[in-house]
Length: 309
Length: 309
Image (tube, rainbow over all chains, first blue to last red; front, side, top):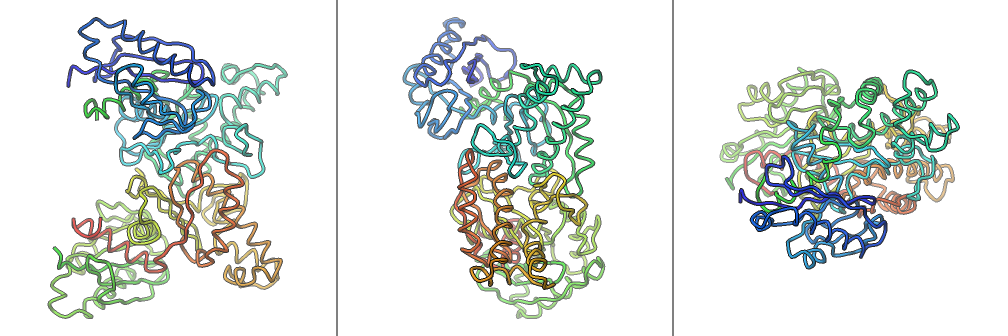
C-alpha cells in the first residue's frame, strides 16, 4: 500500500484545486486547478473529470498505475457512505450521486467529503491542531464554518450538517442573512461582513476585511469595525466553547491571515466574558489554502485503510 | 462477570440517591437516599460513605460479595481518568481526589462521572435516545445542561466541561446570571426563570414553572410567559442544532414533564426559524429522576468492561 497515490480535490464555487498525493501527504506529485461553472451541476462534474485528467496526465505511466482513488471535498450536505450530495447549491447539485457519477466517468473509486470537515481534519492531523483530540477549527472567510473534532473524530452529525457555525443565530431579531434566518453569526463577523461594515463606515464600496486589517492602528474607523466584529466573534465562540469545551481553537480561512491582530483581542474578549467555560488555546491555522486538498487526500487514504491516522 | 453488582449513586446539592444494580440495569436490588450537606466537602464524603453502607446493608452476604465498584454521578468539573473533582461548588469540592478518598473509606473502586453526562448516556442507552448515535439531551430544571452524544460517545471535551448549555450566552449585554456572565440561556428559559417571570407577572412570589404549565390555556399571563420562554429556548437550541446536527433532541429535567405543551410549540418555533439546519426529532426523556443513577451504573459497568454497550 505504500505505493498508493490519490487524486485529492477541493471543489469550491469559484475554483477546483487538485493534487496528486502519496500517503505521506507532503509535496504533491502534480498540482492543477480549474475555474468551476457556478451553479451548473453537470458542468461541474465535467470540470472535475477534466481536472482529474489533467492531474493524471502530469504523471508517468508507472505513477498513473499507482493511483487508487479520487477524494473530493465539496461544500454542501454530503452522505459520506453513499457519495450522494444532498445539496451543494454553489455547485448545482441536489440529491446528486456525485461519487457514482464521477466514478463512472473517471474509472476510479471516488470518495466525497465535506470541504470544511476535511480541512479541519487536515489542520488536526498535519497542522495547527496536532497534539490534541478535542478541537474546534473555525474557518472565517466569505462565510463562517467549523470543524468539530471530539475524541479524535470529526463530528458529522446524525443529519450530516454539523459545523454550520456561520448560521448559529447570535442576535434574536437581528440582521437578515441570505439564508433566510436573522441574526446569523456570519452577518456580524465574517470577512465579508467586516469588509461591508468598513465600506459603509468610510464610504468606499468594495472595501475588504484586508483593508481593515491593513488600516488597524492608523484609521480609527478600521479599529472600530474590527473591534465590534471581534466582540461578536467572541460572543459566538463563547457559546461554542461553553458547549464543547475543546482544548484548542484553530482559526482558519482568509480572516485568520490577520494573525495576532485577530488572536490577541479575541483571547482577551473571551477571558473577560467567560465565567463558566475554560478558555482553550487559540491558534491560527497552518495549512492555508492547501487545507482542503490535504484533508481530502487524508480522508481518502483513511477510507483506503492507509495513510496517517 | 454476569454476577457483578455496582452501587450506583447520583449526588446532587440537595439529595444523594443510590441503587444497587446488576448489569441488566432493571429493577434495583436496593434503593436509598440521603440529604446532602450543601457546600461542605468533607461532610458530603461522609454522607456518600453512609449511603453506600445503607445500600450494602440491604443486601445479603452473597450479594454483598458480588458488589465490584461504586459509580458516582456528581455536578461539577470531573477528571474521569483520575476521579479528581476539580470543582463541584454545591458539594464543596475543589481539586478533591473524590475517587481515591471514597475508595479508601468504602474499600471498593470508585468511578466518578459527570451527573448530566451519565443521565444523558442513560437516556441514550435505555431511554428516549435509543436507536440513534447522534443526539443532544437537554435537561431543563433549576439550570440547563446538556449531554452531547456524537457517534455513540458522550462528548466530555478536552477541558472536561462540555455540555454547559445553560451558560451559552444568547443575548449580548443581556440579563445578569449568578455565574457572573450576562445573557446566559438559563436566565431566559430554565424552570426557575419561567417560575420567576410568572411570579413577577402575577405578583405572587414563589410561583413555579409548574404553576405556569397548569395555567396554560386559562391564564393569558401564563400563556405569555410560557411562549416567551419557548421563543428563547428555540433560539438557543437552534444554535446547538446548527452546530451539531443531531438526529434527535431529548428534553429532560423538571420542565420536560410539561410534555407536549413543551415539545409541540418548540418544534413549531424551530421549524419556523431554521433555514440551514435540519430539525431533529424532538422527544421527552423517559427515565425521569432515575436517569442519573442508571447512568452512573451504566458508566461504571462500562468501566468494568461489562454491561450494556
